[in-house]
Image 1: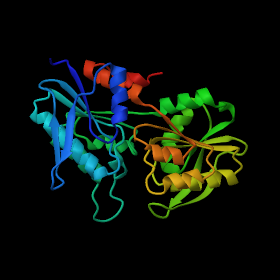
Image 2 (image 1 turned 90 degrees about the horizontal axis):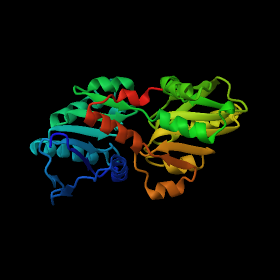
Image 3 (image 1 turned 120 degrees about the vertical axis):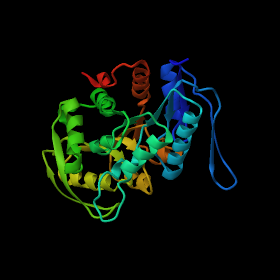
Image 4 (image 1 turned 90 degrees about the vertical axis):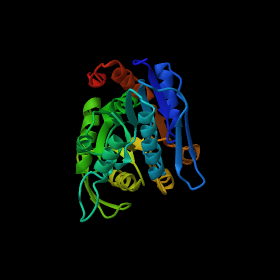
Length: 316
């Protein structure tokens, strides 16, 4: 009983949860999520979880407040049902962008969300490619922080000529992330001099590095409004890049992102399924290719469940 594995999915990304279950050879456990007439959420665990090892899959995607409340109430329901251990599996933790106090009288919401998860009943968290590494330290429970860089790197290694490829960071803040990607593929790297004007507008200057005649891969942790990508494509084309490809972990694609990216001149966009991309968005963005990270999450869950090392997944 104590070793039995249970995987539940809230509503943000049930397809990814189903793929994880397929790789683990277990059936998704039933969870009922409904709303009362006053719009309050109702969550009921529909099978016995007493002393079981429970994993709840939920990305923080649009509508973000609803998905967070779904997860918090589900975690509390698991604790009330006497689950042995509860792990919140959050493939995309959107509040990782709120990681510092960079304006007066604001909340460091990334830390607040971590505290809420602990209060709701999470014993540990499994997530992927946080926007900033320091967000890991916001949690007062164990966190397993996966990365999709090997998955994306393997795709490029298999499908592209690396001899003409260069990894591009859209600003100095993303240089470390793009550097890990470049190191994995053993390719050079370039950095764009960027200034953010507003949440949706950026101003870019020079390219630091050689991109002329090369296939430039813009590597980011997420694609939100697409403003940074569109500006970067223009900068790289003007610098003489032969082709421009985007690689990112989280395809948030909010607001007019699909329309902007479709007209941006990107040759292709390679991302993962940490965020569910609706069919309508995929149809409007023919350059988009979505890779599955379900095998990686399944392997991590299996290792957490058995007590094996999760970090060993990324040892070369």
